[in-house]
Image (cartoon, rainbow, N blue to C red; front, side, top):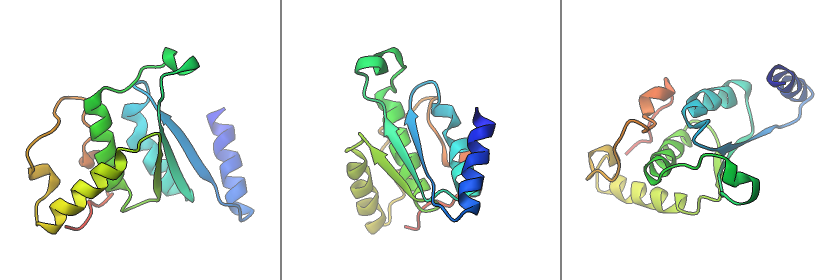
Length: 137
């Protein structure tokens, strides 16, 4: 199925169509996000729309993210937004992260050097992104 989807994506791009990629993030696919981001970049998607799981209905059967994972993902997406177009859905708290990061940058403080608000092995680190740049302070 994945191979057919990629073939359709490439055919659409060759036909001049723009493609938006939607991803619902769960505990199951969290560690795959850097690979998905690379694919979005390499295949030239117009936009990567990242949906934060709302655990209702059938979504209750999926593994939700911990608060720490959500916070780390928000920072990951903020950094990624300098390299590819990213939009979040059901993540209104992304705006808070964007404002915090802008304020820190205005004061010359790297968010990584700010007092820690998160820690743990589930952190998605920017070095996982390979050549994606961090935002300029």
